[in-house]
Length: 252
Image (cartoon, rainbow, N blue to C red; front, side, top):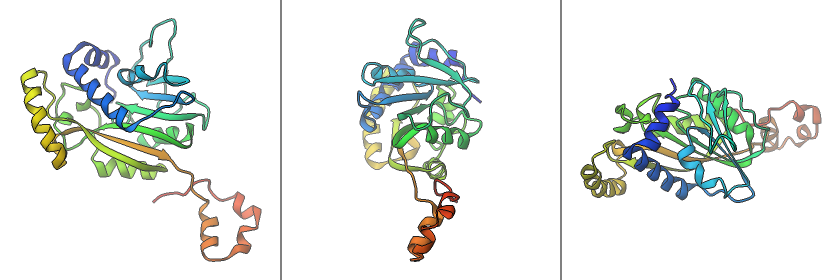
């Protein structure tokens, strides 16, 4: 189930809670993500509140939105770089992207493994992905006031297992969007102090979002590795055996 594009736009660009949410997520992006001028960046889901910073910073910045969510022209109708796509088939060349940013994409996905496989495909070797998902144990996933209350939330173990199954190596994970999804400024100010203490204690229930930076890793063919570690070097020298082995290791 995808959150509608109008509701997403209204939340992030039309409410004080949405503005504060975008600001907090942007701080996390700045902490975990660094896109160079020569790199290509692709955002998937609803990443418009975060991509604006990179329009002039990266050589190419593109926004992709799933067709069940809907799309808008961005940054404007004349210079639109926002595409409406099928979540399982991205019109991006294989191994052409340096970095991928995902927000409101995974928890809404109808086929998470297929979506993650597309990200793996378009990333260059050692390319980096930063993905945000609603924290299953947090208060934000239990409220329908924000987009994080829709779709499927994830626990840290669940999202890490999915990344490992789809050939990603986890570099760093953080809990962000602390506190409660409230619009009252007094409540926000009060929870800031509490959030600082909770952040030190790493209490997951008060974190609305899990942010994970992961990289695409190419593994040696499995049979090649098995033959090497068993010292059966003669097996490695047979090109027919090596050519028929899978490109990447299949995780259980």
